Length: 99
Image (tube, rainbow, N blue to C red; front, side):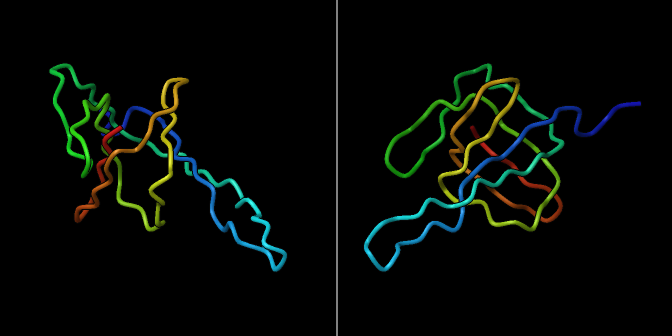
């Protein structure tokens, strides 16, 4: 039987950082979300616009839709490597991340 999402990846980020009364910054708590996904490699050197530059993306990650809000500073861990999330799009029944 064919599995729709045969790969596993992890989205990591820090949340809840704040400035104290004395002017010191307290780091946020690390959070992570493990997801089942389908990773499609960029074999043709396609580019994506990040608003400033055009960047060649490594993988397009397809996954089920989720409720959490993922910050812009989040990273995606896949096959032992960490990738910067370039774009996240939520559709009706699934989401796509470009890394």
